[in-house]
Image 1 (cartoon, one colour):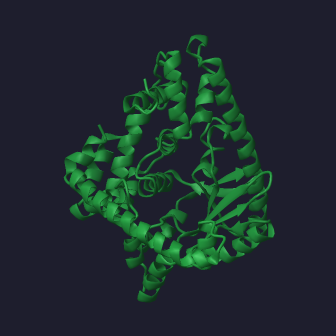
Image 2 (spheres, helix red, strand yellow):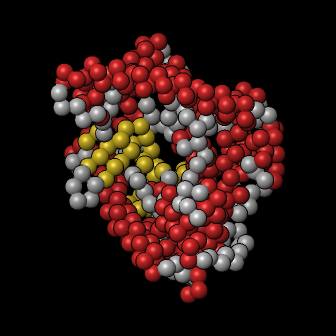
Image 3 (spheres, rainbow, N blue to C red):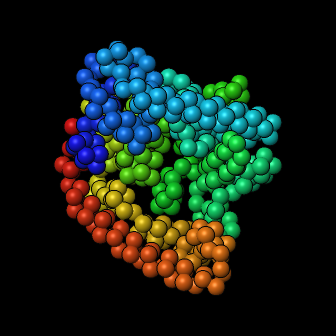
Length: 407
């Protein structure tokens, strides 16, 4: 069967999740591992790689019977990725531990996000949860001090359309450091990239729902289950349009581990207040379908009840296949006219330094051509994005379309 066959990919994803669920069942609901032929292992491995689940698949493989083992060459590839992830994560947590020690002395409170929080607390081991970067929530007033700390440790800010663009218009700042053990750290002072939501969602709600943890013997925090559910769900849908089995597995681990502690009244009220009822309903349904974790039926019913018409359209726009047109909407949701125009200007016409580095332009005389080319490409993407958004609004318009994802 050809590698690009949709059915081949779907079967690979289905058997991938079945294998992992058999090894690490949720809610004491164990399932038998599926029978897997040598040919099917290729599809499973491809799906695992696409969804960043290769290390977890390798950990799963260790507990399988000999008859279910992948072919030798493929098993070696899985093992290689597993150990590479282990080394990378070990280095990342060593860096994080040193950074947290500095935070403690400087009295900078922090909350670890996504993989940085979950790899050491809910996953079988740090090697099983890949981390592209370390995401840390800090107070907005501590951003400058963290900036200075990271620069002193050899980090630099990543490429920006203009100087201080992300500090002025975004919710985070990314830093990178090269060398033998490259690291990327994202400092967040909010959790939502869309200004529309930043205006409506008080970050203090999340700060009020944290719990202490230790990383490399250094104190820090992670979100309590209610805030964890809201953040993981919103990030998966608003940033990645609900795709990716790894994000769903993160959420499934939280739902299963804290199932007796979750205050669903708090979660549902927040979803309603933040206009995230549809986001939460959709992603919880996908998580349940993919990983078999149990979620109370009343949760879906109450989320559906508060999922109004305007929010339904908002959900459809944010989950379209193309969301480039959202940049204009983001700009219009900034707090004042000056910020709006500056955001749009720097988005359309970034600095010369950005253009040269982004497009590897050696001759500055070619810059006008690249600006025109960038603008033309942007117009094309904008038009395609608007069309995709309209199409998605039509597709999900009506309660039944969203409800299907929970079945």
